[in-house]
Amino acid sequence: MMAKGRIITIIALCVVGFYSVLADNPCLQGPPVPKNAAECCVTPFLVEPSAFMTCHSKWIGQTKRQMALEGIPRGCCVAECVMNSTKLYSDGKIDREALTKLYLGSTKTMASEWKQITLDAIDGCFKMADSMKDDIEAGAKLTPAFEGEQICHPISGTILACMGMTLFAECPAKLFTVNDDCNKLKTYHSKCPFS
Image 1 (cartoon, helix red, strand yellow):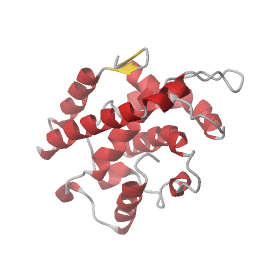
Image 2 (spheres, one colour; image 1 turned 30 degrees about the vertical axis):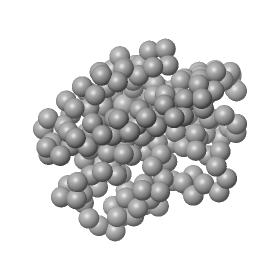
Image 3 (cartoon, one colour; image 1 turned 135 degrees about the vertical axis):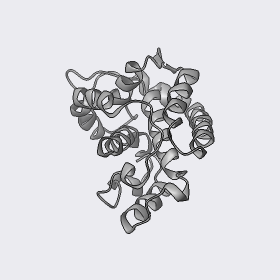
């Protein structure tokens, strides 16, 4: 559970750069509590935590360095690695049909409400990514800013962060752990869906 919560947090951090161009962004500080999202609501997932952690270990050092850079937001290599591990990513595109199958597969042992919530989230996240395609493509065309930097396409981080935060926000009331920290986390993510 803790690893799944960390997945949402790290993928979201990859994408926060996309929204940091907004001055006075209250979301840049991160969540107000040290609670993992999965401790408040277990949501459908794309990959097992172990697959995520392999990508995280490989790319988190670069991601932290990229977060300090100004200018056009960079792609998240942690997210691209996750998408590559599932064969969902190729040449700047995410295989929506395959992504849908994987997410729906994780809902089979969950409450029945998750199936429709997941389908709606996929639809919303792909529409959101499409509305940002110029910014996403600009991020994909960047050149390395420091020695050894790998340029990854922003589409993976955009979709994964959107899915994680949307599913968390739409957690059915009967499945959400009600306590002060979880309530604060839910309020935060209602205003800061990608950070």
